[in-house]
Structure formats: C-alpha cells, structure tokens
Length: 154
Image 1: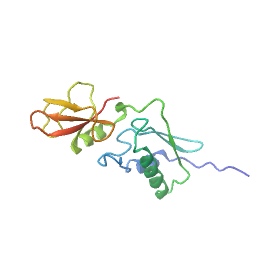
Image 2: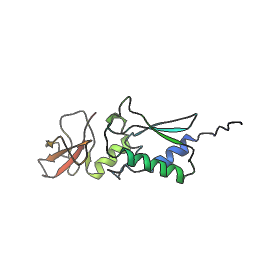
Image 3: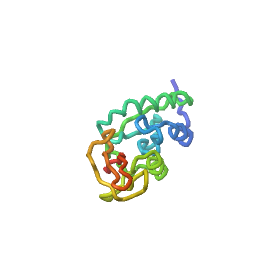
C-alpha cells in the first residue's frame, strides 16, 4: 500500500491557530502568547508548549486547537505537547504584549516595576506572587489604586 504525503500549508494552519483564543485570557490568541512553537512535518504536527508544565488550561488549549484544525479541514494534523525547552515569556509576540496591556494585564518585563495597564504609572508594587492564574502575579497601582495582574517573567 502506497503512502500519500499531504502537502503542509503552514501559513494556513497558523492562520487557523491565530484565531484560537487562550482560554484564560481570551483577548490574546495562543500564537500571541507563543504557545505554538512550530509546525513539524512527516507527520504534520502542531508543536505547543504550555506557559508552564502544570498549567491547568493545557488540556483546554489542546482541545481548542484540535477543534479548530478539524473545523478547518486539518484533521490529519496532530497536536504535540513539547516541554523542553520550557516556554518563556520571551515568546510572547509584540501584538500579544499590546493585547495583554489593553486587556488590563501588565505584560512581562525584566524590570522590578510594572506599568499600570489602567493609568500607565510605574508607581506600582506586587501584592502577591499568586494572581488570578498561576502564570500571573497580583499587583496594585499606588497612583490610581487599581489592582491588576502581571504576567510572571520566566
């Protein structure tokens, strides 16, 4: 029996994945967050890395990817979880950082301070290392007094 190799249209697959929202932060897509690492071939696979190994949203993300691929006619494409090297906040796209900010979440930075996503002030401080999800910390702005999440750097 002959094996038929299907051409991989990476751009079309990425366009589908670009419309898959993160289940915890629907303002950003899984491509914005850098969760999608690449498209591999033979067999065709979408390689993904969760924002951290124990992320509770991983299964929901994988199911959303599967559903989106199936709906777009890419039922032959597998979804493969890759844990090494681990996901890094460096993988968040510039568009993703802008969308996080607009959604009210301070994007990760290497500095000790975070800009308040409400008023832009740098007069902020961390309230708790644990935020609304495990990948975020709870912060507060000392200027406008609003609480906000900040993506943890890693």
